[in-house]
Length: 169
Image (cartoon, rainbow, N blue to C red):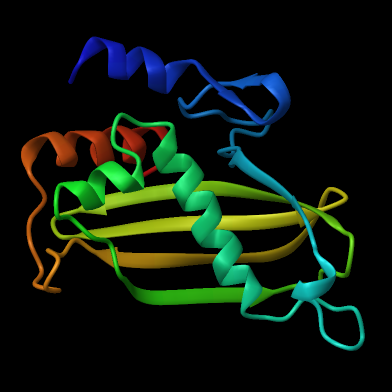
């Protein structure tokens, strides 16, 4: 693995200048701490007539968090696509604990990232005011532009292996 890439994984800047480590972080009880990658406010357009966020938005917020995580590597999504590699969703799970409402400030975090063979699984959690409101995961297949499953090139495997090692994969 490229030393500069490794250093970049260890020392990254996130949201409003806060420094976090991409290495495995654990709380005082030894549990892995999810990595905050995105903060967003629930827009009026994201809600229904009762002011509750529409259930499909959570998957969009998962995607936004995954994109931000990839942006922190040497292979952000646009570069991955530029190489003819795509990551379509083949499975998605969302567990709704509490509703998000108009103007809530949400924190989307990435938990475990697991890459193996032609699959990638990313686990997420969304918190509002330090309360878990949603958790879930997406699973992806590596494909070419025509949708044929492919094994990613060695350098791409190394990038996802680093993410996996840093996030409990």
